[in-house]
Length: 623
Image 1 (cartoon, helix red, strand yellow):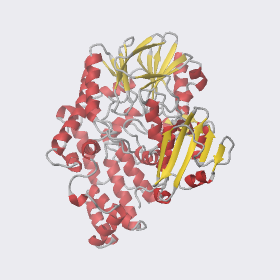
Image 2 (cartoon, one colour; image 1 turned 45 degrees about the horizontal axis):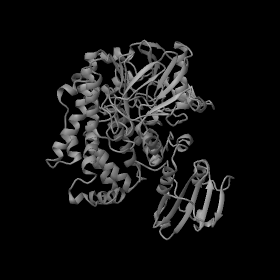
Image 3 (cartoon, one colour; image 1 turned 90 degrees about the vertical axis):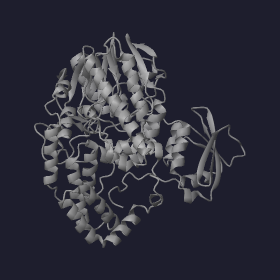
């Protein structure tokens, strides 16, 4: 199936955007280029096997005027985000941008350097550090700061320091309270489903180009190297807590429950610089990311931004984050933080106002418009989050999935619903005819709805799949939001070419290794096939030799329950092993050495026999 050109309605919408948005405001262009020092000689970053895990040159096409196939506002953002290299923020404070989804910062101390947020992969983090050292010298790393618990801010840590560095005390790992728990839980509990959807969100499998992936708004895309993690040696717990690292004073502000469940900001008096982690970037962020997550709280998000202004606003001269480019000048910073604060506060308050008038999330998403002053700021545009899906997230946070209409309380699931809709309309061929009329009229949202039903009723209907792919493509061409564009194009790609699976994996071995025993048992419980286990009544004791801890586990009614207590000789099965060996056992390794078994080994066989594996290739646009 061939890609189509943008339709007239898309071209007209782009022309309208060019005429209505402040494209003559070039402040961000100057800011994104300010302080450029240099970049990689070879923009391709490879792993040990020689595979390319990041190639900054694949975005060199993003220059000049926007093509008809890309929303001009998104094109502008992608041009800014695609700039790659080492940048001086102020003397002594540097950033490497454009070598992964996120930004890696370097704070120079008295004798070495403190690194902030070492990207997703060891390979990209190592390349960023090498670029910094090429221009700033071979400074020793004294600490690594993780501003929050998302993988693009800790995954590359073992590309820049070693476990021995940390164990010896030469390097501190600094993170907010709850960092390790939330980091590993997010990537394991729902990790398979999140990773599959992240493939759509970041467009990792899409071709780069004017009709393909042009970026994700927050950054270009995710690197595909090896993610790692190290436990913190210093956990920050309190706003106002200060620590001095290599002569540099850090004043921390806690911001949990904002963009991440574990997150913090910090101020550097030496540099009059404020790091806002991921809570003030040059885009409207996600309150519920399209890959899936717990709904974030825009109310406390707004409050923490107010607190940052009150705590640091009189002194700060530069604000930087772990995505995008900095903002310089006290007046400019106070205005930027206030606009970001008002953005999240407005969406929260207005959504609640309207839901209390009886409107549901989908209705409110169509009703809310930002105030003119907010709309006029490029930093509020929905390149990564969007007003539409953020409003629905706020509704979900307070009201749940049900909108109160009893007809929507117990609808049929998608495939059964599709079959009934298609039958009522007159069959798949008739649905395609109606969808074609909608497509020709430029009503791509209605065409997509119809064709979604068509392919769920008959996944093999070629005309439906072709038109559905064409429709999603037009929606992508018109999207200002980078992740929406990637979702639409990913759906079109799978309709045309088949399932591309999960391009990146977040549940890497070193991340799984950081699971606590409780989290590991939770991860196993999630995999229990309930119906298969209904009739089982099993118990065992597990003693972890390396932790000197013992747990009693039962499997009854399809539920795996654990309590910490000493092993009991009366328990039918007793296992003695280390936590790493338990992790391998949970993964299906029953043959390797390292397990002492006493009692009925059949108990373990029965438990392992009812564990399901996640499917990283599950269908999304097809039933």
